[in-house]
Structures are given as C-alpha cells and as structure tokens.
Length: 273
Length: 149
Image (cartoon, rainbow over all chains, first blue to last red; front, side):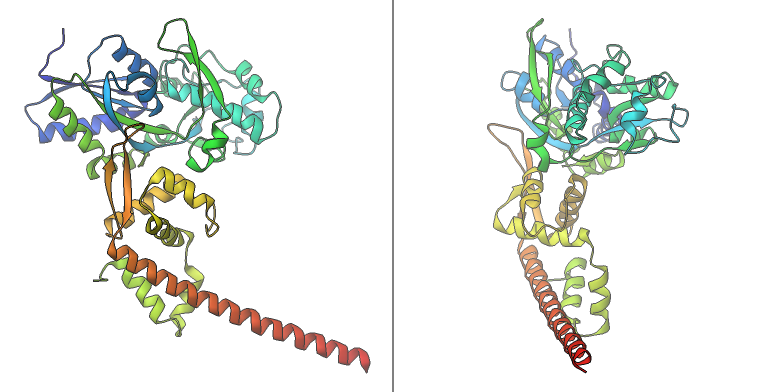
C-alpha cells in the first residue's frame, strides 16, 4: 500500500547526489511535502515500475529506457536533462595508479594483478555502457580480441546492481579500477582516466560510430534478452501517468530541468542539456 | 540595444581593428569564442536542440575543431543567459523532450558583427599572403641575379 501524500521518486544510483540536492531544495519550497527516494540501476528501476511498484517521478541514466520500457503505458513524456561520459576511476592505492595513462590503460587493466569491474549490465546502464566502451576500444585501437580479453579479466560484476555500489568497493580498496560516469568520479573526488570521445559515449557527433557497439541484456520478458546499441549518454526524467501527486511531480521535474537544476547538475559534474 | 558584454566586446574589436588592440584580440581569440559564432550561425539557419547542434557543428565545414558536448552546452547556456539565444522545452511525440534553442534579435546582431570581424580577418590574411608572395618573388629574383653574376 502506498501513501498518496508522499511524493515517491525512483532514480538512477548515479544521480544520488543530484536528487538529494533537488529534494532538499524542493522541500524548502514545499515545506509540508513528504518525499521518498530510491536509487537503483536504471534498468532495474524501469522494471520495478513495470512490475507494479508505484513512483511519481522517474529519473533514469539512459533516456532510451523510457521508450523501450515505459512509454506510453506508464509515462507519457520524458525529458533529456543531462549528458556524461564513461571514465576509468581509481584511487591512490590502486595497483598501477602512478603509471596508468590514457595511452596505456588497456595493458594496465589486463595485468593479472589488477582488479577492475563494471556494474551489472542487466540492471544498470553504466554496466552495459562499459561493455560498449570495450567493444569500441577494440575498433578504435585496432586491437582484435580486446573485448573478450577485458571481459575475461574483469572481476565478477553481478554483485554490483548499480554503479554506486561499484564506486563504493573501489573506495574500499576491493577493486583497483572501475568504469564509472565522469560525474561520479568528480563527486567522489576520485582520480580518473579520460577516454577518447570516439569511445567514451559522450559525443552525439559519433552516434553512428557508437551504434556499432551492441550488448545483450535481459528484456522486460523474464528469461528473454534483447540487444541494445551504443548511444551518446543522456539522462532523462519523466512523470508517472498514474501519479496521485501529478502537479507536485511536474513541479519537481520543472525544478530539475530549470536553472536551479542546471546549477546542481553542473556542481555535481554532469552536463546540463 | 547591444548592451550585453559579449556584444560590447565584439563591437570594440570590430571598430578598433586598425589600432594595436586588434592585434591583441587576433592572437587571443579562442576556440571557445569562435564556437559561439558557429552556434549562432547554425541557430540562424534553424532552431535546434543541443544534440542536433553538436552533430551539425561537427559536420560543418567551418568548425574550428572537434566540438565536445560539454563545450557546446556550456556555450549554449552562456548565450542563453546573455539573451543571444532563447530556449524552451519541446515535447516530441516520438522521442524525448529536449530544450530547443533559437536565435534572438540580439543574437542576429551579434552574428552580423562576427561576420564583419571575420571579413576583416580574411582581408588581413589575404594582404599578408600577398605581401609574403611578393617577398618570396623578390628573394627568387635576387637569387637568380646572384647566379647570373
């Protein structure tokens, strides 16, 4: 049973800081309002709505998830509000942290002593985007077999339902390197390697190039998989069609997509669109 | 009225091209600023959202270099704030809603000033090339005369 007087928001784990700051501001503007937020892998979040869980506002790390899973039955309109890129984050105690550069990251990661990982690609866009980066790197660096090499050397990803969990283990020293969004690395003040724009999924100019990457993920039908293709990274937000607090949900979306939201996004290392 | 900082700056540059300051501007004009001119021109052609603008900019023959996403959106926000462009959210029936940008009258005037400035630059470069060609020709003549003697 859900309380219809509580604004319920579900969001990409990568948006944790952004959503908390927006929630603080929104609560100041609406002091009587109660709100609840849940951070999950965005694919998992969309599937929670499909399974009947109720949320008023949905903010996901991949705008394509709305069209694939939520529009038109559960969400009418959705808005692209931020862009980002995939980077390789690490810490000062990561193995090879003093030597890794944008030019040698592949060999550094393939060292058998080094532990690296991505989040679960069945649940989290950051996970399938990391796999796409590996496929694009194979083409970009003309290094045949690279994708399989990286896949074979990667630590078990199933324990990371969202990139937020991956970042936590990186900070705890359980991993040496993690494929994260640039904004997460900035928020956590982690050093990171920037990848060429042709492979880091940041630039719409390379949309056709990114499209060559394809990853198989679980579809909305349990047990079935679908192939998704690489796209420039874009975050989007929408309002549930059956929200009991429709005006408030829209007001929250207006905040995130307005000047206050732009400022928060920028301060959290995302690119407001 | 052209009372915005960017317009003031460009007007100052256009109208002081014959004095010493023009040289300083020529040597310090950044890719960041030239991207603004390029975006104004693309938005003059037709209103666009950022995603499309980045694609159009990278396909344009006049681009200064690879336009990365952060740079383009940062300049769009800056120009929006300076009222050179305006934006609103456009809802799409087939895809996501996106912020649509369009040129304002002030933006059109600024684009005209950019064009004047670039015309001046072009003329100056052509003059340089002409004088350089004359210099090379004179060197060649001198060399020939030395060889004859």
